[in-house]
Image (cartoon, rainbow over all chains, first blue to last red; front, side, top):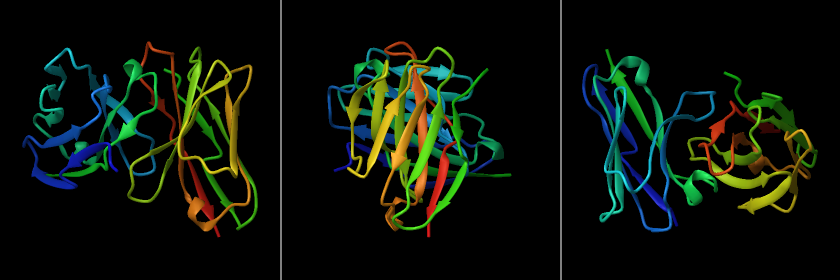
Amino acid sequence: QQQVKQSPQSLIVQKGGIPIINCAYENTAFDYFPWYQQFPGKGPALLIAIRPDVSEKKEGRFTISFNKSAKQFSLHIMDSQPGDSATYFCAASKGSGSEKLVFGKGTKLTVNP
Amino acid sequence: AAGVIQSPRHLIKEKRETATLKCYPIPRHDTVYWYQQGPGQDPQFLISFYEKMQSDKGSIPDRFSAQQFSDYHSELNMSSLELGDSALYFCASSLQAVQPQHFGDGTRLSIL
């Protein structure tokens, strides 16, 4: 049973577009929600993270929107660039991020020039 | 900034052999996590250590064992290797309850 459900599985946008990746969770004990970016042959790299007491967080071109009542969160990438082409994973953890990460299945993003 | 170092980066073994994967956390990080990522899959948690003690255990086969040493580096020992063990193995480190997990670039294990 996938504890964190992520969609879409793949996404293609044009340069400058705003791809949106969505995640949903069931376990209300989760209290830390990071997004990781992974390039082929590399480890996941932390992009941005949010805690449930905040509804939105921005870091550069990346924004997380969090809906606690719906148990959903999403990643928006503003002004997307071909260099953003990668696989994006949402994740969830208990214990303010000190415990294991439970990942979504990933979204392969392609940004065309 | 120093990152998580994993060695070796690539490892090729045959069935029923053993393998040892090493992880050197970011300096001053006291918590280490191991994850397994199959082709096209999401990382799956295996095991974690905090201050040299096992802190959590996931879907780790009994054929695998791990430990964290006094200098906080960790080793994942894998025995009786099977074809299904072929995967990327990632180590992540964190400062307990203070920072998020930072991942190394992984060890690609191929079983022939």
